[in-house]
Length: 153
Image 1 (cartoon, one colour):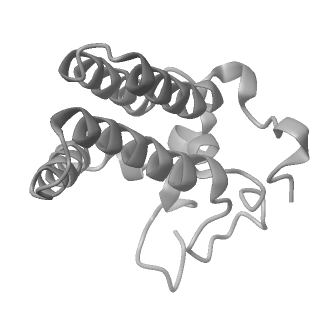
Image 2 (cartoon, rainbow, N blue to C red):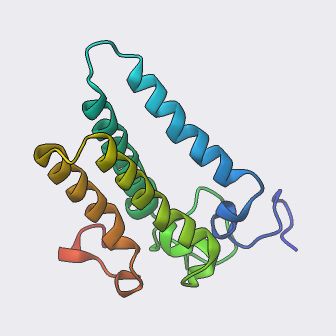
């Protein structure tokens, strides 16, 4: 037991995506982003879908693949200090339900976006690049890998 902290986990980042209601909150927040973008009068439907996809993937990349360490004081003696949030989820175990959800959700959003933009080549390329930028770091082969030394320390 950790004395003086409000949680019983050594690192609360490891279990946050397994919390009750977090997946529903995630889906609702993406839907809210889409509705907010739809309310802007001069955006067309393809632009709104592309913006929803790109903003979602950018935020997901920043929060899961660039932020390192934990916002909590943990008794792990700095072991998780050099790990991104994605690498900390479920103690680094691959193919868990949380990781599958976070890997499938950008693909589902990409498919919806592709359908609603009617496969317009310009939007399609932007959305594909956005999807690849958020999906490739999630592969097990990239666990702990820092491409070109970016985000190494």
